[in-house]
Length: 450
Ligand SMILES: NC(=O)c1ccc[n+]([C@@H]2O[C@H](COP(=O)([O-])OP(=O)(O)OC[C@H]3O[C@@H](n4cnc5c(N)ncnc54)[C@H](O)[C@@H]3O)[C@@H](O)[C@H]2O)c1
Image (cartoon, rainbow, N blue to C red; front, side, top):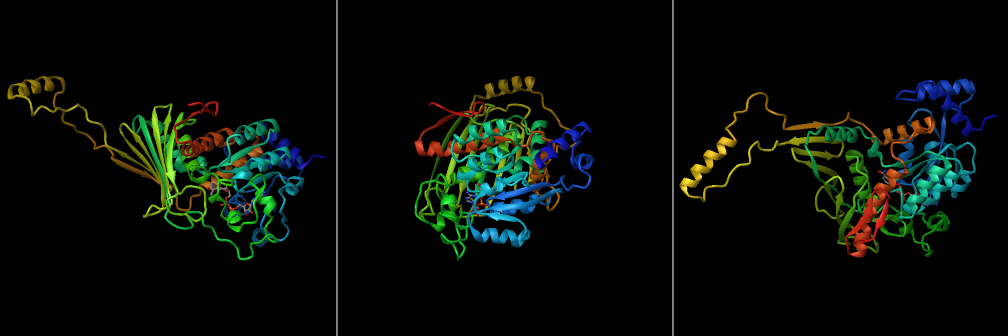
C-alpha cells in the first residue's frame, strides 16, 4: 500500500515517462488513474503555517490551482484559526502548534507565511517531516539561515520554492526577454524603489480587540526571539522590530532583488553601501522607515534601491533598467521600453576657436562624419506591454510550485535563488549597522572581509 508521498512520487515517475509537456496536470491525472483508479490522490493536500494576512491571501490563491486542497492550518492566534474555518470549512484541522500538522500523513505540502524569524525552523522541520514547502520571502531572517535551508532541501530531497511571485510573472518574463534582445543596449544601471505614504504601508496592522495571552500563543510566536513579556504590537505588527522581521530591506528590497536577479540573470552584488534612518514613525519600532542603498554588480552595472515610508506622495514600486540605447521601466503590472538611439556622430564644441581653426576643424570633421539624411520608418520610441486585466503572478507562482511538487522537477525559485535575493537585501542592514561598505560573494553567498 502506497502512502500519499510515495504515491505522488510513483505517479510522477509514470507521468515523466509519458513525455511531460508544459502543463503537467493531464499526464499526472492519467498517472494517478493508473495507480489507484478510485482514489482522490491526485490532489495535493496543503497545510498553511502562519494564517495571517499573507498566509490567507496565498491560500486563497493556491487552492485555485486545480487539484490542490487545504486540509490544515496552524497559527498562534485563535481568531485567525477560527476565520480559516469560516473561509474553508469546519472540517479543516487547526492547531496552534505546527508540529501537529507535520505529523499528519494527509499533508503533502506546507505554505509557510509566518514572521521571518520562524522561516528557517518551520521550513526545515517541514522538510524533515517529508513535506514540500512553499516558503514566503524573505527566505532568511539572519545569514546562517541560508546555508541551512539550502542544505536541508538537498538532503531531504524535498521541493522548496520561495515566495517571490514576480519570478513567475509574465510581466517580468517579458522584461527579461526584452533586456536579452538588446532593445535598450548594454545595461549600466538599475534603479528601483518602493514608496509608501500611509500608516498601513508603514506596517501598523490592526490588532484584534480580543488580543491577549488567552487568544494568542505568545511563547510559540516568540520562538527563538528574545523572551519578553506579552506585547500585542510585537505580535501583530512584528515587522517593526528586528527580532522578528528584517526591516524594509527584508520586507521590500528583497522583492526588488528577486526581480533584478530574475530579469538580468545576475546572482547578486559584490559591494553594498546603505544609509537610512527612522524619520517619521517614532512609535517604539527599531526598524528604519527610510533606506537608500547602492550595489555593484560584477556584470558591469550598478543598482540603487530606495524605500521610503514617508514619501509625501503616491505609493508605488518600480524599476528603471538603464541601457546605452534606452530604458526599460516596470511600473506595477506593466513593462515599457523608451528608446532614444545614441547619436551617430560625436559632435563638436569649436565656437571658441579662431575662425580659421573652426573652418579647418569642420572640414576635417565632415570628411570623417559626412552629413547623413535618414529615411525609412521612424523607430518606435516607446512601447508598453501589460498583461490581461486580472492577471495574477501569485497564481502563476503557485501553479509553478504545484507543478514541481507533482513532477519533482526543479522549482522556478529555489533556496539558492531565495538566499541570493534575501542575502543581498540584508547587506543593506549590515552596511547601515556598521557604517561601512560591505562585501559579498554572490557565488559562494558569503560575506567577505572588507
Ligand atoms: N510575497 C509577498 O508579496 C508577501 C507579502 C506580504 C507578506 N509576505 C511574507 O509573508 C510572511 C507573513 O507576513 P504577514 O503579513 O502575513 O504577517 P501576519 O502577521 O499577518 O501573519 C503572520 C502569522 O503567523 C503566525 N505565527 C507566528 N508564529 C507562528 C508559529 N510559530 N507557527 C504558526 N504561526 C505563527 C501569526 O500568529 C500570524 O497570524 C512574512 O514573511 C512576509 O514577509 C510576503
